[in-house]
Image (tube, rainbow, N blue to C red):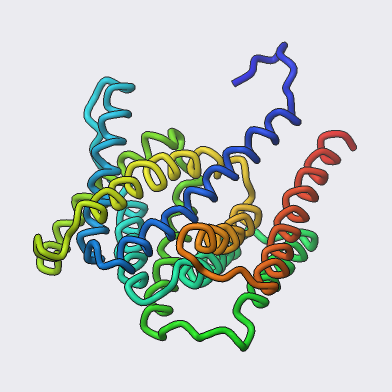
Amino acid sequence: MPSGNQPQNPVGGRLLTTLLLALTLCAFAGNSLLNRAALAENTIDWASFTAIRLVSGAVMLALLLGFRHGRAVLPRSDTIVPAVALFVYAVSFSFAYVSLDAAIGALILFPAGQLSLQIIGIVRGIHPTPVQWAGLLLAIAGLAVFLAPGDTAPPLVGGLIMALAGIAWGFYSWAGKGAARPALATARNFVGAALLCLLLIPVLGNGEQIQSIGILLAIISGTITSGLGYITWYAVLPRLSVSTAAASQLSVPAIAALGGVLLLGETLTTRFFIGSGMIFAGIALTMFKLGELKQRQRNP
């Protein structure tokens, strides 16, 4: 924390926040691509992918943060809610991707997370400003372009399960806003969620269903795009309003769609350009106006 005689650099702070947020959102999109790639090619079953993802992330973070703090990283009473939310999210996420494409899954997941964040915020007495509402509505309109009639409707069960994953993600994100030590909190959450993977033992696939490439994709998802990605997410959350945090996640479907085109052979359409453009414009409006209002409050 800067001392009283050190000038603060709000521009540098906003730039760092923007960079961390961009890296985090790319990691989130990467989770969709990794999960769908593994399940679409039948290289692993959904339960094994979930367990390997959470356990590998927990081991990596526990070792990393354990060495840093000089003690074992164990769950605590204040990590119960985020750990359960993380487990429900990861289980629902992988199960839904058995039937959903990467982009469609992301299109369902993050609006559901955005909605749950907004509802939690409103219940807690936090209301978006008119400008923030405008940015959110523009971003949601971009999602509507993706989902407008003409595309193949997603499977109902898979869609509902992914919506549940989004709701769980919203609770996990809200819990992160109060974390005093984001990295340590993330490690504890992962360890708690990894312990809950014992509940998946009855539905784990046998050895014949699991290939080395599936295990590798699950480990990458657990250690890099989840473990490290969530550390940056928890680190950037305290710098964002609830509305900005919610709106920023709406960019992930566009990123996942682009990744699907480049990596999974999906088709790039005019709908993609229009929808993603509206999403990013809405996010930019929300974040720019929020910074402008804060600056006016500091310099009336």
